Amino acid sequence: LKDIQYVYSSYYNKLELFRFDSNVGKFVGYTEFGVKNAERFNNDPSIIGARMAQREVYCLHNIGIW
Image (cartoon, rainbow, N blue to C red; front, side):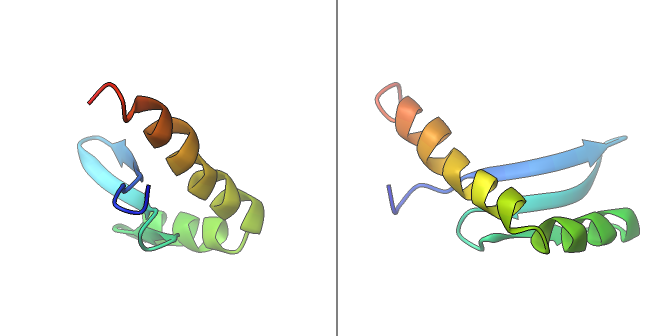
């Protein structure tokens, strides 16, 4: 499971606003709006914990398929 990377991205109008990367462990913003939301998400440990748990829930479940 350590080799697996979970990435959650949010797009609007073909523009990436922010992204969560399980290897980085936090949200990164790519636009002004995305940076503000990334800061808000990074300050809430429950959101970070939920995204980190998604790596195990989503990726571990689908490992056998790939």
